[in-house]
Length: 137
Image (cartoon, rainbow, N blue to C red):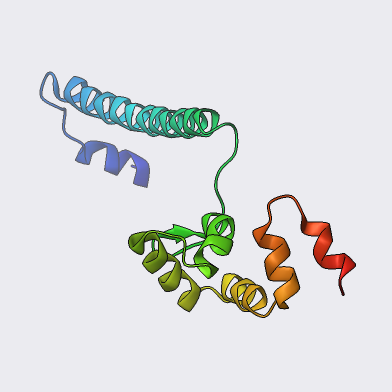
């Protein structure tokens, strides 16, 4: 008798239904794995769709302006002139103050705004007469 024939004799027959049970378990595992992959793909698609919708609703642009002190740089820049002239409400002025303590770019703009010569400051106060400041230098 050969070695392989000896091992064949060691095998026992499976009870009826054992192979079908094993096949069913493997098939279930495969289905769950495929369903998991499909679920991940669907979730990623939904996230991308939601992001795209948000971008489109915001006018197609995402505000990448840094935010410090609860206010974005672009809003600080828009209000910097009024802040320098103490024309803002206290809450907005406080947010800008907090922003300027943390943001080097905006604080440099604020310092430059405060260092303008009086003629330039007067010209800035006059709406639409920005060229007046350049004529008196």
